[in-house]
Length: 235
Image (cartoon, rainbow, N blue to C red):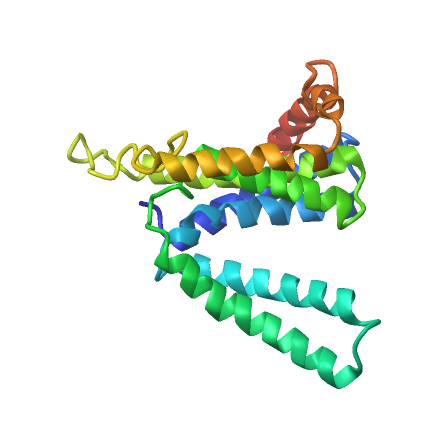
């Protein structure tokens, strides 16, 4: 499989190209393009969250801990004094960074449910909903940000499958087919649980009509394609 450096480098490069092309095409401002590039990079390491000893899981749970701490402080700042508020924030950070990550490691296996298109879709929709309701982004930008994470995750899965092919020996490694899969075929219960979470998340998503407009052949994607062609020609 591809290593951490390969995943994050390729995803970061792809995210930068996408952000720049969309900016040139007028799909978003430069300030809006930066989070899209970052989310693509983040998605590029997301599937390795189930690898117990990877740098990805440490980075991801550190980020989750920081975000959880920020949310805790924002929710409790009007209810607690400075001292108790700092203690609550610290406890939240430690709980997510160490306790939650340890529990997650205990109940996940590498190349399991998180190495699938279903898990990538779940995380993408979660980003879309959070972007709309927690960060106050527009409906269109919320969809774009969710798509950026999904794009990065798909890059990760595709790279792992490419590295499962031994071009020198002209053979397929045992890991072939374990990364780029629809869901975890060995644990259908986990996949059904993810489908249930996606269904429960549906009311919190932006209108589907906005996504349809984005995907329309004569809409933003055609502009993006033309901008990407010009950008690559310039490179």
